[in-house]
Image (tube, rainbow, N blue to C red; front, side):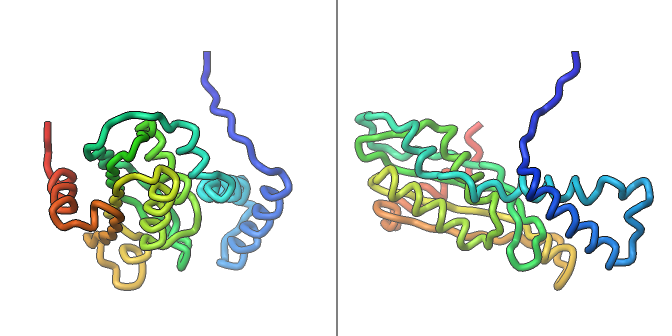
Length: 198
């Protein structure tokens, strides 16, 4: 029995974006009637809708749907969360890992919801600095923890494929609120995300 993943797309948006991609490809000098490109405009239109679906998602509601009262007040860390986003300057991918920590203040959240929050904000046209801030503020404002920390490490195709063409560069951004503004707590978090506990 074959498996088929069902994806839903707005037919009107798909058609309009498909037509624009077809025009762009032709203006770049390609022949959109050749076999390899016949379905490319439609595929690209669907891909862009998938990669920007975060605009239709509410990260705060995702967190609120999995908050639980719990008397736990130590650091909770989810690290090495894969992320893929599109740079808003060139619409080229940037990708890497996010590390998130929070110190509960009466409520914990289902662990899978933190990667989902990352996806909500990553699946938009972004810059890494804003992505870090969006994740940080959403968790801080929704969970109202004693503290929250976010670190993102990412490689940017706009630096690797064009421009300065530096293939091994990695950009790191960070944000801290509450208890993580204390150097001691911040250093504990940074040490834990950089260590291999296995």
